[in-house]
Every structure is written in C-alpha cells, then in structure tokens.
Amino acid sequence: MLHERAEAGVKLSFPGKALARRISRKVRPHVQRTVAKYSAGSEAEQARNLLIEGDNLQALVTLYRERGHVDLILTDPPYNTGNDFRYNDKWDHDPNDAGIGDIVSADDRAKHTKWMKFMFPRLRLMKQMLKPSGVLAICIDHRELFHLGQMLDEIFGEQNRLAIINWQKITSPKNHDQGVSTATEYVLVYAKNDEAVSTGRIRRSDKTAAGYVNPDSDPRGAWAPSDSTLMGASTHPGQVYGIQNPFTGRLHYPQEGRCWRNERRKMKAAVEEWGVTYEDRDLDDGLRPALLIKGARNPLTEDYASDAVVAAAQEKALAVRSQDWPRYFWRNDQRRRPGHGELRYKTYLEEVAGGVVPTTFWASTEETQELELGSISWPHKESGTSEIGVRELNAVVGRGHGFDTVKPMKLIQKIVQLWCPPDGTVVDPFAGSGTTGHAVLALNQTEGARRRFILIEQGRPEKGDSYARSLTADRLARVISGDWADGKGSPLPGGFEFRQLTKRVDAQALLQMEREEMVDTVVSSYFDSSRRRGPNLERCADRSYSYLVAKNADDEGFYLVWDGPDQNTDFTEDVWEACVQEGEQANLKPKYHVYARFNLFPTTGVHFYQIPDRILADFGLDVRTDSYAEDDEEDQE
Image (cartoon, rainbow, N blue to C red; front, side, top):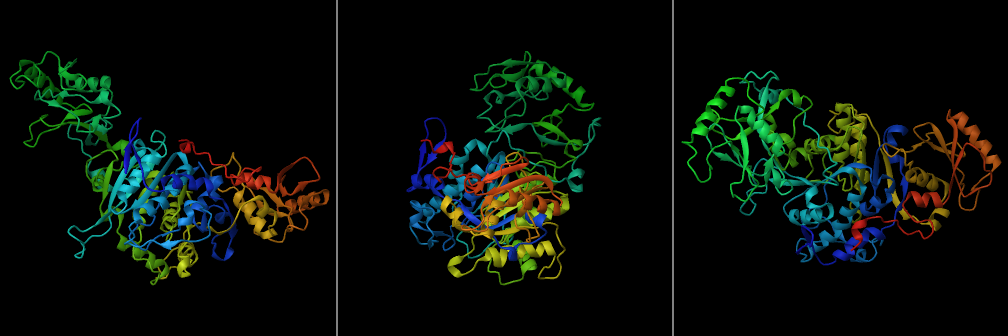
C-alpha cells in the first residue's frame, strides 16, 4: 500500500514494516575467522579483497569500518520466484536468531510481504555503506520490480533514482511463457546523493567515431546531433517554455518531463546566433514566457507562416546556415527542408575522447544519439545474456554447479565501469557464483585499475551446500591462477581473503577468545579513520612471531599481546623489548601499534589499543553497553 506524504512523494506500507525498519538496529556484528584454505593470492592481495561466508545482514553490520566509504554496491538478490529464499519469523523480533528460516514457496500468500521484510533492512544497511557519491545497482525481474522500486524510492529518495536499466537476458522467446515472453530483466540504479554522484563514460569505439561528421565545416571538427533538452521539468520549471523556429515561425517545446538543457539567458544567446533577435513574451500557455522572434505574431493564435517578421528571420538564418552552424541548430525535417526540424545540440568528437555517455538505448552509442541516462535498454550484444553467464561459469569451474541463471560478465563490467572509479570499492551482498569479483579482477587487468571487492555469500546451508566455498571461492581462485576447467584461462592479478562469520561480538566473547581468533578479530576490525580507502592491515605471512601479527601501508607493525583468556594479555617492559626485536627482524618502522588487555609499560612510540574497548568501538559498538551504534537519522519518526 502507498500513502502520500505531507511533504512530497509517497510512502510504502506493508505488514511488519515497522519491525523491518528496526531490525538493522538490533543486528550484532560477528567475529570473522579467516580460512586460509579458501583464500587466494599473496598476503598483500588478500588484504585488498574479501569473500565473507555468512548472513549478509550480519556481515554488513560487521563491516562497520567500511560504512560510508563504498563506491558501488552491485548485487543480485533472490527474485522471489518461489523456493529461492528463506524467512525466519523470529527475525521480526530478533535478527540475531541462529535459525536460517523456512523456504518461502511460490504459493505462500505472504511471499511478497516476507520478501519485502527480508529486503528492507538490508537495503537500509546498503545505503549506510555507501559514500556520499556512492551508487546502488540492484538486479531484479518483473515479480518484485515495483515493490523493490517503491522501497528504494522511500529509502534513497525518488530524486536519487539514476536509471532503470532494461537488459536482454534471452535472445529467443520462450514458447511456454503466458502471452508475452519475458526476455528482459532490470537493474535499478540509485545514488546516495544525486548531486554528488558521477556517472562514467563507455569506451568509444571506432564505429562510434564514424557516426561523427562535419557537414558544415565546423572548425572544432566532427560532431553528432544530440538532444537539446534534459530530464528535470519538475525541478527546473524555469527551463520549460516555447522557442520559436526562425526558419518556420513554429513554436517548439521540450518533450513532456524534459526541459531545455541550459538556463534562459544561455538559450536566448544560443538561438540568437542565427542572426535573429528574440524577446520574452507570455503566451498564456501555462508555462514561463516563450522566446519569440522580436516583433513576430503569436504563433499559437495567429498565422505565423505569412508573418513578414518570420520571413525576414528565415532569410537571416539561411545566411548563417551557409557557414558553420551554431552549437544549437535547427535540423532538417523529414522532407529535408533546411532548418524545419527540431532544435538540436552539437556534441563534438573531441569531447568524447574518453568515452561516450550511456543512452536511453544502449545500441545508440553506436549511432549519433547522446541522450540522458534514464530508462536504458541494453540488448544482448551490449550486456550479454543469462545463457552466456552460465557458459562463462562453466568455462571456469566446469558443469554441475547447479546455477541455471548467471549474470553475464559484460553486464556487470559495464555497471562497474559506469559507477565505480578505478581505485574504488565494490560490495556485493548476494555474491552467488562470484561474477562481481570476477568482473572486478578482469577490469583491473584490462584498465590497469586497483578496484577492491567485498563479496558476501551464505550458500544453501539447508542443503549442506556452502557454495561460498565450493563455488564462489573456487571460481575466484581459478580466475586468479588461470586454472580454468576448460583449460583456456589466463591468470588475473589479485587475491582475496576468505572469512567466515562465527559468534556474535560483545565484551565477554572477546575476552574469551583464543589467540588465533583474536588475531582474526584485530585484523578484520581495525581501521584508521585517516586511511579509509584501501585495505587497513596486511596480515604477516610469518606466523612464528610471538607478538607481530600485521602491518599497515606505512610499514608500521601491529602487535597482539594475547595468549588466550587465562594467559599473558598485558603489555609489559619485557613484551615491549620483544616487540622491538620482532619489528627490526621484519624490517618495520619503529612505530608500534599494540593490542593488549592492560598497558603496564607506558612508553613513547607506542599506540596502545585496549582489549576489548578498542575492538568494540571498531565494530560500532558502545563500549559501555555493547549496544550497536546505529546512526541512521531516518529512524526518527
């Protein structure tokens, strides 16, 4: 159900929504245990990328140090097709309940409500993970398209909806479909803040360049005709009005929902480059005053075709047209009469040297259109198909993986190219077979980029199938090593660390940890607020040290004084001397970051982190109460 808000827009209502809003506040972070067997790459590369096995709601909360610093969340959640996701009713009150829930069947009358209750808290946490310029791109099909869009409109704001991408998943219609074959699926794209987001360009091809011509011998070189309007009529009403064509006297308006691409002053100057003087005139058409040829008749109520002022303007415009045309130009009509068509805008080839903008139809990047990113259709040649995605997965890991539908690499790579900078971070909370990680590794190689990825996957524990290990990690390890099942792979630079979510984090749990568990916790929780981008700590490959466990990018050592809950846990002078010796042996700088229970030897050159307080704080927990530090202002209702 939708309710109109007093201020603007609509608000979605569904049974259990209030509980779903509060769930993210109640989820507790969990300990992350590193499983070296399923990790791949060098220690340095493992520190860059993560594959986390566990519930994604718990994992998103556990990744507190990444909050507000993710460039792109790209994910493919369950589509609610029946028997593809679980829901535990106990989560309504305790999202930390260990039960995995029951499969929601296709004939469950509450399946849509359960799906929304499942997704809503996850979407809220995804938004919190994004940096101000970050973007969420989420795949969906027709079954929950409208529900998902309504939730995203409420959580992100309708004004932050960047695109509804329509991509072609199959190339042949299915005869068993009812009435209309569902050949496409969707990607909903939302910005955390549409004023801060930057959409990248698609690499320009030779065919694209061939679409740029220079029929008027413009000194700036080849150009292509583009739209003279933009989306935004509702937010820019001052740029919605009529402009009179000097060749015909006819009045031209932006299409519904669109506005002229520049403010009135600039648009007036642009059309006056045709040698004609314009004036503002109110035509009682319900819009802002029109730009009319000075002294011309009202084109809405009078015969403009026989207007002497228009005839004089046409003569001047034709004289200008015999030279190089102004940037805003009147194109020919279908009968090829000069200037009788719509107002257009020149886009110069030199301006798209770095690539072309995505358009309302992806194939138009191979033509001469430059349209705003809105509802985009990506045919299979541009996005790939689900069948291609399955073949790509088969090539890497072999058949028998159990995935019937897999997103194609080309689709995922295009989204990454558009909304994640070369040194950015991509998070996929529903990692599945690992296509997002594969796409990032492949793009890094071809573009010389250094993007990071964080993947989260639980697998199907009800079937004893932890395919975070058996499939996702296997695929990533194979593309890194080049050991593809079909024998045709080439190694990709990179690596990842495999972590498993285990017990909940609180002060008591931390103080009962064994050493290796504490090492994992320190490495996974620590962050330097001045060094958010990129990995924070690189685990030491040499496990023989008594205290040295990791180093940062500045080659400063991190030392853990913890032999277990009932053993040595305090920083003393003897421990200090051992830390200095280990740091020198590892060729690290004489700056010491020390984790311990108590500091019994204060000295210079040591940054001391008390256990459990510092770790609780790095997980976003209040050190006094162990309560989760939820800071989402949207809950203030």
